[in-house]
Amino acid sequence: MKLLKLEFLKCRRRKIVLVCAAVLAVELIWMGAFFTRQDAEDLKWGWMLLLYNLSMVDAIILPLSVATLASRNCELEHKGSTWKLLETMTSPGSLYAAKLCWGALVLAALLMIRSGLFLGVGIAQGFQGPVPWGRFGVFTLISWAVSMMVYALQQGLSLWFANQAAALVCGIAGSFLGILSMLFPPALIRCVPWGYYGLMSLVLMDWNQVTRVTSFYWRWPEPTDLLLLCLWATIFLAVGRTLFVRKEV
Amino acid sequence: MNMIETHDLCKQYGTTLRVSHLNLSVPEGSIYGFLGPNGAGKSTTLKMILGLVRPTAGDIQVLEKTMNNANRLAVLRQVGSLIESPSYYGHLTGEENLRIVQTLRGVPERNIREVLQIVRLDGQFGKKVAHYSLGMKQRLALATALLGYPKLLILDEPTNGLDPAGIQEMRELICKLPGQFGMTVVVSSHLLSEIDQMADHVAIIREGELVFQDTLEALHSRSRHHLALRTTNNAIAHHLLAEKSVPFQEEEGYLILPILSDEITAQLTHFLMKNHLGVIRLEERQKSLEDIFLELTGKAASL
Image (cartoon, rainbow over all chains, first blue to last red; front, side):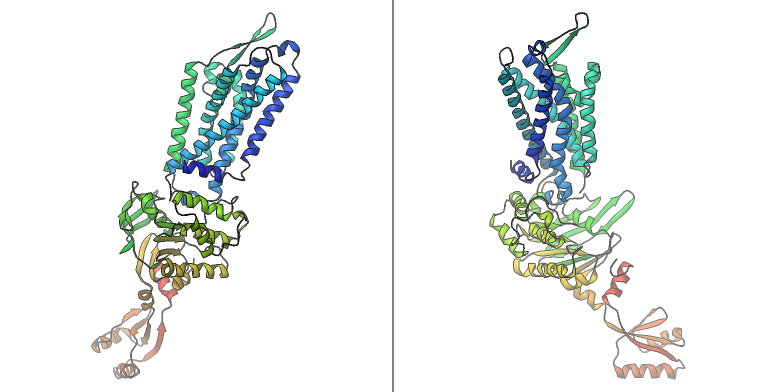
């Protein structure tokens, strides 16, 4: 707890709130631009269209956002050569855990605010049908879980490399692969960590080639995908932590 | 009581033994100068003592406890350190930096203000550390190390990069610590003059090997005056000096003798001449500390 509290103190003036506000602004502008181009026929899908597109926007925006947050939190230690000071007062394993918890809390807050904002937008726009509170909750949880898996990868990179270019390039590549992977067959998407934003979407689209009509339907993520998500997260955590703990300062 | 003891301490990187069978003994209450040219293995040794680098072999005792993973953090609660460059968060103020360490060490909040006064940074509230000069950053790092009023302070090249005024200020701060707070200070440097002005015990390390460890007084005693004698035939002079029981050693064509009284010197030269030996040179010499350092390390006094 003490270490976690200190992570927030260390991140003072690191413009973390600004980064989160920028993520929300980009998602809002993106979705706003998308919805203004939809006709009345498309808008009847309301909530489904919103959640389907949000998972796509997540796949593009969140990998880079997660990389930026992890980098902002880890870079300050490299910049100030503080490892050799901190590791005389606490163990590297505890430091790793505190940084991971900080990321988990920041991402949870960001994604909850994001969901709240879009719920508000949907209600204000008068989307058809009852408000899918439960599905929004699950969607937020899935976005957070996938983001944490990506965060574990990014934290590992940001802690290992003093130069944050490597971690940020990985984030940019993740954003690109995240959206590109939606065009891959499901088996291949499962091999792309950033592809899980789309893979675990709660809404799927069906486009009928004959009638040329697009329809949407609700679904739940497959248990295999949940297991694979946990497996990826475990690998990133185990490798990242081991490399960090074994690194001599 | 020794605050630090190392036995056969070794560190190998690849195939190179960077620290080789080091046996250090740091007496309580001393300012222990750890001297050696750049790359001699000083920082690696100090990092091993703090558990930041794993030794390849040997063991380390700090405050009479053998350091291991289980007790490392408990032992280090009584140790303050400044290794290589100062550690700080540039986007935070000096006080905020100290608050982080104070929380981690679990020491009273009032210590922050006290240590800022000790290092004379108490007028810098609200200023981000990124805007500090290097001297101020070094002083903040010293304040960080002092925060828990540790029994043992390990300072690795604390005057690196400072201007002469900064060096003097840092030196004054370090010198008053044992008297004022009862601390034992280990201070490393590649500058002999710096250690000479601060330390009372000295260890000299060369290419990872300990070449000298004793009091500063003992190091100074090596710089005693001596006589250098050169004759027309030093080989015969050997026998004659032995006959008169005058201790000597040969060095670069000179016979090095201890300081003799004027009367004995006159008798000796007369005795040599009586034995048909010409005295070409008879000089009074004194080895400087730099000469001794050079002899011990095989390098110039400051590299």
